[in-house]
Image 1 (tube, rainbow, N blue to C red):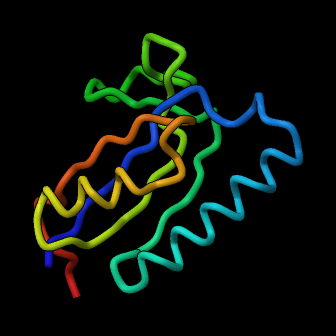
Image 2: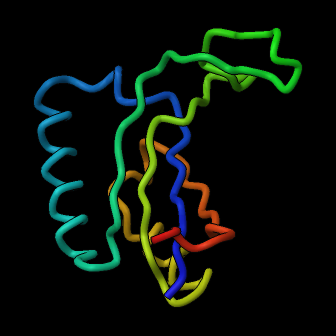
Length: 111
């Protein structure tokens, strides 16, 4: 099995009502349970933060992309290959709210 990072990109859930948020959270929870051992973790990210460049001098407050799209969260999963990881991403209730970038992890976790 290989590890993958699913990066959630979009304008976030700030426009949703409390009822819509509650419904989508229930969908997320059901999806994670369905993934079972393929789910390794994940978190929603705050909209703010800092960007530190390689010059060690410049710090920029986020969001950082030059558009309305931000990295809103991530999920770590494991799958046998890129195609299976893509299928897991396609099954996500996040689609419609976010686009999902599926990236393989280059090196396995150190133990």
